[in-house]
Length: 343
Ligand SMILES: [Zn+2]
Image (cartoon, rainbow, N blue to C red; front, side):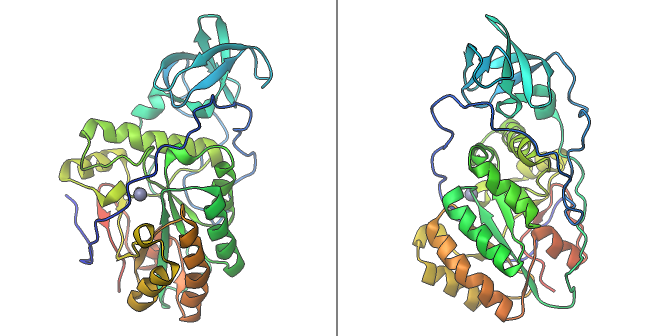
């Protein structure tokens, strides 16, 4: 069973912008998981250094975006085959950054990130770990800013800059299909700043409108893109559009993810009005709120540049969703839904 917290429900959210994976074939040299350890204060699940349990080869994989399979790991080696989105390939091994796949012209090398192994897709999310509360005073007011649908480097980097300037934390609900190219650096910066990564599905899939059988692929593809980018797993999931039904919640329970909604909906995506976004937050904010915004819009970055210092000025600590939950003594449980952590 699951429950709802809070009552200020808002169920509107934008239609996502169309999938932005480039139509051109992805290049496979840019994707490497950094060698550095995650910061100690970051309690999101670490990928670890050794092989994962699902790294058993050969196994089938699903191609996530059109990508070249080359004759070697060198980015300029001959193209043996162009893999197509949705194609199933046989993965025969990995060198850590590439998979070796069978092609009609022999063994090809492809960046790991663009092919999701079926054992990964079939697997569950690792157990949630509560974060440390270092630097957070549980007695003082706090709110969790959340930013959905990104990353989108031009606007997301502005949000990250203001968070960094003020030493504030936020939670980013990432779309897996946006985690490529220059947006990869946004994800790594989020981790560096102590922000939290969240799962917003691969392609903004609505849990209430799609067959339950499609929830796992959409969630696991986003998990995979994020983990392959920064070595960390998302902490929680935010259902796109706030769409949820009982069967979907049960599937999230099986997958191992808590669903996070919000208690203040800024409607930033609709108004594109920084003054209004600022006003909605500052006139409604209360201790324990989860605030919904979208870092894919420049107008939201404009608003964030004003909201973050203003909330700090009012005495609010700006924390991640998991930090807020932990500070309120709540244990985030898979398949359950949370909208706020008011006292
Ligand atoms: Zn969304």
